[in-house]
Image (cartoon, rainbow, N blue to C red):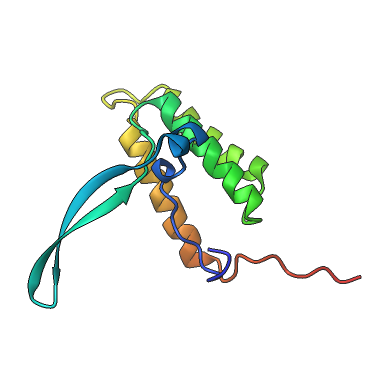
Length: 130
């Protein structure tokens, strides 16, 4: 993102733990169409589960740390966003409605990053003048 100066959605499941990195990758096969013929390829996949609240929370923490190190967003800003999302999961729903699910939380996260990408012209911080 920093090199291209464009906001791109980073799926929380791609923010894997160090333990998962050390354990290695899962091999999967992908069928694709290339130049008019079908090709079967091995594809390395390293993703973290985000199917429960705690797993998603941990993945979002790792994403916030990655953004901090990449100088894209402060960890405090990302934590504020993650807290907002998780508070929505535990708010009382209006009568006739149910609470949002983890899948809906991920949809909201994706939509917010898409909106951010359409409104932000540059993600690099301006150089400081002395």
